[in-house]
Amino acid sequence: MGASGDAGALPRNGDLRQRALAVLERNHRDGHTVPAQELYPFQWCWDSGPIALGWAAVGRWDTAWTELERLFSAQWTSGMVPHIVFWQEDDGYFPGPEIWATGRNPPTTGLTQPPLPVSAAARLFAGDPDRDRALSSFRSLWPHLVAWLSWIERARQGPHGASVIVHPWESGMDNSPSWDQSLSVVPEMSNEHIERRDVATVSADQRPSSREYRQYLGIVEVLRTAGWNTERQPADSPFAVEDPGFTAITARAAADLAAVATAAGVDGRASTRLAESLGTGLHALWDDDMGWYRPYDVLAKCAVGPATSTGLVALWAGVPVARVHRMLARVDSWRTTLPAAIPTSQPDDPSFDPIRYWRGPVWVLINWLVADGLARAGFTDRASALRTATRTLVARSFSEYYDPRNAAGIGGQGFSWSAALTLAWLTEA
Ligand code: DGY
Image (cartoon, rainbow, N blue to C red; front, side, top):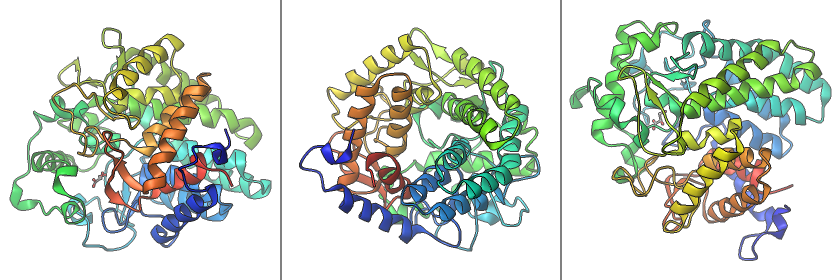
């Protein structure tokens, strides 16, 4: 579908692209792009994937490759890629390097995030018109990509064969209602050690609660005290949950590597095997009564939470058609009352909140993952409708997220992946 054929009320393609590129340029630092000035002033792991695709979409291939190279230069020897790399000092963010105390140089956190940068690397390889650069950049990233995925396979395999997260921050969907039950038993850090900076930039009612922050920091404290041993975090952490979204993104990352391995002259057999085994793990998280993929709390030994975005992201990995239909039927029922696609949590659940971060608002990234999965599964009309709906959102603002009742842009503004996906998905050059 040509973007220029979209609804007449939208700005012209070129204007939207220019504004999106301006956001990326403003957020670009020395070799990496921060998700949003002030609110997130460092390099964030899963953001780097779509951000690299945004740079590539405007022909800035060197910048795109460098974004990923910088991230992987902070990889731990275990293969874990940290969720934040603190490239420079900045008092504007809490919790900073002194709280994490991982002893790394550059300073990093001791948690990971869904490996979207792996899929981004495969896309850069496939799309870069300079084949020499594509080959040499991809081949030098290859051992890092494989090491990350094999660490996830080795150190994060749950009882169903799905991937385990040890902190809600690892899902990328921090305060999703999916984690409420599992979080309820974790130790809380006392208020006096918490100096939240996020609420200086974004209204507190759009951010996680103080209690959630005490719990987030409580888990960090436990893992720090355990010595940041990335081989045994599910045993060390008071929070250990098989996450369908993380699993789906890892499965697709492995499949994406396998798909380009021959052309890159590397051995993709381990990636093929991993994609299959994670696919089996994801399959096991399907709740047939609910018609949705649900997290499984490894410590409490039960499935948890209402229908949320982490289950929906299974579509990105590819799921059986009958399940696509069931999930779409549910999403459609949400949209009769909430027109802006797609709320990140089940609106008729008491946990729903239309403006609070991952408890309801619409996210461009989720829409992209879902639309891509739908297109691959042959639901091209649905994918294209979601693209059009998402374009309407970014035409108003490049926000971190959007209120599903009225499409108002909320959370951080000038948000990098909303701009990057405008370039890579919602418009054409
Ligand atoms: C934050 O600080 O809100 C981030 O999501 C943590 O990764």
